[in-house]
Image (cartoon, rainbow, N blue to C red):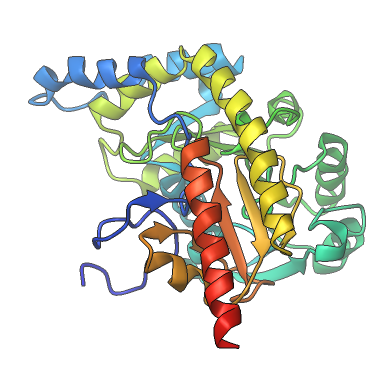
Length: 354
């Protein structure tokens, strides 16, 4: 084993036998041609160290996000920045949603932080509402971790509710970490970057992984008006942590907005098709607003699909869920048809043995 701990995420298709991967929520159209070309053009410069300040990339991000350059910190993927945030702050107490992305809890555990989960409920489509506010007032955490759209539910956090959360947290000086890594793959999601100037306690996480199909190149960034915090985060990371190829790819990706619009059209159509077919099989499906679906199905489904060469994300390691919950990425129609066919076959075989 290369690692001492088990991989907590989807996307591990390297063990052999996987022909279709629904476990990682990357762009179903793949990587934009402009990004591939930028990487190709950068190959002759591999003998040089990368720009330690990511100058051209930061310039492209500031133009894209319409924020000052001092608000931007780049990292080796979103996970790199999650760990840098936790290491820079070393909070003693925090609150996170349940279920939500597991990496927040892992990063907090490394600095010995106590995490209080706020459980979301299937009956409310796992939505966060104003009942969260008195919970925060009771716990008074140093840091609050939020995700919009939430992973694995695909549900968006309304901006007015975020503003209420910020107002409540200001009473004792808590910080708010907001993960927007999947936001560009939603149609109705609104970024909170307009709140940054008035709320230096707010940090927004973004990544190229999902929107631009760049999971293998590792590139993310965060936005925050607290420059002192960004300096502390940078100090926790090794030098040259963003490769020259990643920087070039990021600049090219931000010019691919037409590609992103084509992706949204495909996601909207195929998400509806997948939802209808999963519900027709009798599964409960969370009404996702993102490029992935959370559903409840028969136990053993993940293993049954693996035997057919299809990877999906089992959600048993998400707080608040168990082994009967699964997450699938929205993929091109031919792949989605193959998935539904395989699930139907699994269910038919399972019923024969019961």
